[in-house]
Image (cartoon, rainbow, N blue to C red; front, top):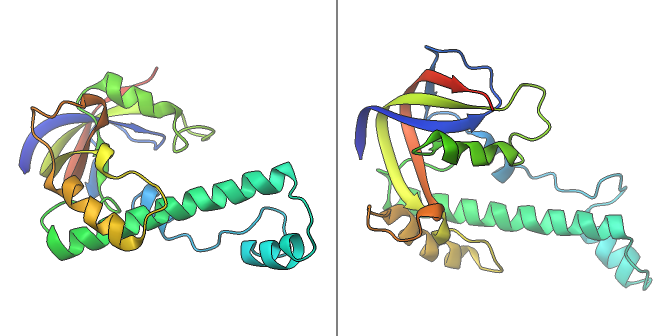
Length: 197
């Protein structure tokens, strides 16, 4: 839906100032960089994951070290994340072109308290700039949907695409699982408030 002068909130570590204009919809956002990362390798390893499994561990019947298992879990988690996001974007481009892309959109919350919950996520933890919530005045298009429709799992790309239709169709105000609601925005957003906790 089109919105004008609607105020919503986002957790961020960027150094925004009151009056800054941010444009979303053209460049990849933080999440998209994770989707397009193709360099998944074991930390401090000389070989890639497939080589480590096939040549070293299985063939020679060696046990995996705890750090190696953690790295493998991380690689598989990121692979599932990437497959889900690519499946969702394929579905959007084929059937829901009018919706904001998850790869270029600004993710928003209705209230500052909701955005505050995202200050503990990986995007905000350990950053050198101070995490904060910014209030932004929106002019563009907004999608209200539910992240309950975009779960990971051992699915094929076709299954992710099929599941994505529910996500892109969005939800109404009568949707019961309020905690799963997320907003995607494309357009211009003016920073009108900065809240530090």
